[in-house]
Image (cartoon, rainbow, N blue to C red; front, top):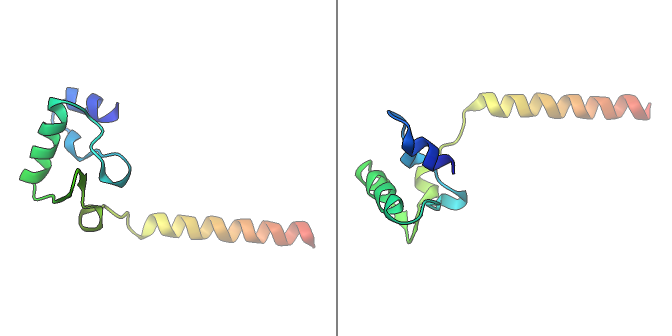
Length: 83
C-alpha cells in the first residue's frame, strides 16, 4: 500500500520502497515498472527480489547510538530495582 501511495505522488522515489527481503509488493504492470526503474538505477536482482546484500540501506551511527543509550538506561533501571 505504501508503494502505491508513493506511486500516486510526484517527485518521490516510490520504486525504492520494497517488502521484506527485497520483494516487490506491487502486482501487475506496476511491478514491471518498479523493477525496470530499479534496474535503470543499477539495482541488481536475485530472482524476483532485490539483492539486499548489495543494495540495502543501513542507517548511520545515530540509530545505533540511541539504541546503546536505551540499553544502558534499561540496565541501570534493573540495578536500581534489585538494589
